[in-house]
Length: 69
Image (tube, rainbow, N blue to C red; front, side, top):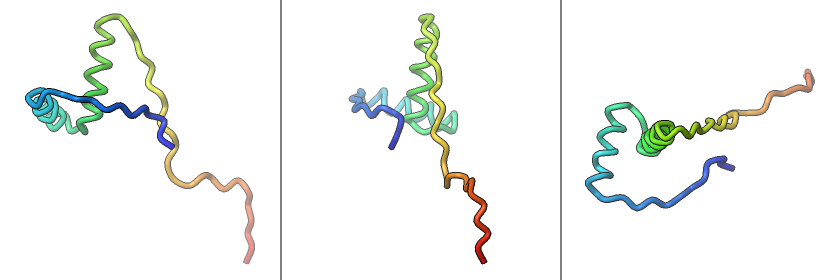
């Protein structure tokens, strides 16, 4: 399950296009670009927001060493 909170966001079309251009220029997805800009804005207001660690991807490590032939 995703640890991120989904939130529908309505944007002015001109703002959306500007965000897409900024995201492409920074090689980010639009969602990542919005997160970066929001964090920067909060930081300027003196509100530090910790980054939640992403969940590990892939298969879990196999702790049991079952060498069955």
